[in-house]
Length: 299
Image (cartoon, rainbow, N blue to C red):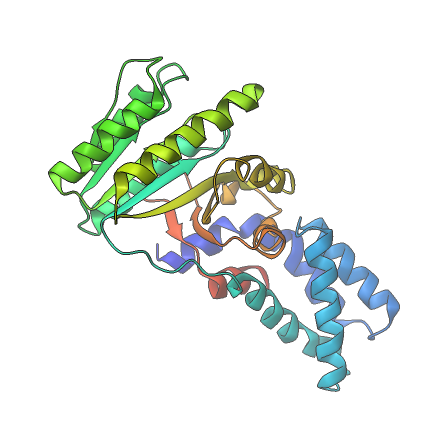
């Protein structure tokens, strides 16, 4: 299955929830207040969020007036253009190799699985990958990550359960440099029930990375679960207390009818979605492409 087919398949629930309603609205309405009210409800129901929905409608009305659009069916293309512009507004520049990727996220979002899939994707692109198992709090986290590392053909650096996560990161960076691998993926804990300790731990880890990385590029990825919808957005605020988020890895896109949250995340938080999880297999992590996303939900 090609990349577009995977994303399209993953968005089938979202498409079923949105596309039918949009097509019905565009074909059988006039451009009056009722039209815009119905469009607003459709967008909100897909979990785009109030802030981004309001901006989309505002920009849509401007485009309709400027281009003298009178037919509802012609509105679809304008909406498509505005959605893609929203998704493209805050791109993440492609960082150079070697590269350190710090991956954060609350427990249960699929963070460890995402790291395994990302390691596999990088290995398939002939990148040599090292993984740092810096979630030393969760029982068997390192063991789970080791299984993924073995499947992806990646090296893994780990300490005993309960060890200092910053010490794991320190050793991993040293090994990463010594072995001259291309990418270091750093797993971290996500226990929000002890938020203060978690944030202090992340700050300590980032200080180690900044000190030891030297000229090596560093990007910070936050893993979010698409099935949690708008609740995922609030998690960015939590992690931004400790680190600057450069990009989002959105998991479980195939398990939700509210894939519109992608627009909400990018439009409201001004952080790009870089990768999306589109299934359970090790190959089911794809680079996010805005045109394919919009095409998949607005046929």
